[in-house]
Image 1 (cartoon, rainbow, N blue to C red):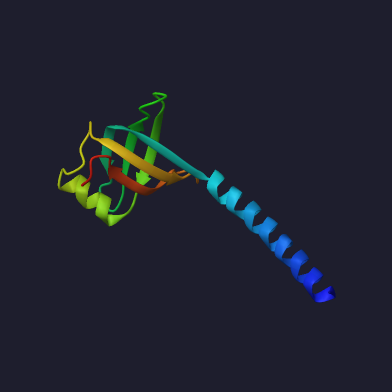
Image 2 (cartoon, rainbow, N blue to C red):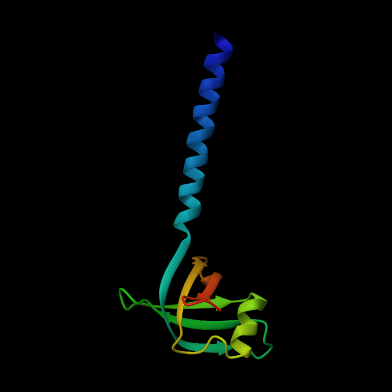
Length: 106
C-alpha cells in the first residue's frame, strides 16, 4: 500500500513539473504567417535578416536566419520579397528562426 501511494505521489509530482517546463518552453516561441517585406544577406553569407508582416494583425517581425537550407533558398531566389512565409522563431532577443518556409511549399 505504501509503495503504491509513494509511486502515485511521485508520478503526480513529475507530471506537474513536466507540464510547468513545457508551458515555459512554449512561451518563448513566436509564430507568424505573412509576406516577406525585406531580406538582407550578411556580407559573409552565413546569416540573413528577414522582415515579415503578419497577415492577420499587420505587425512586422525581424527574424535572424542562420540555417543553410533557408540561406541557399535566398541565394537561389527560391524565396524572395513578397513570398508568403510560415515562420517560427525563438524569442531570444535576436528572434532566431527555427522554421522559415513558403506556405505553398518549396
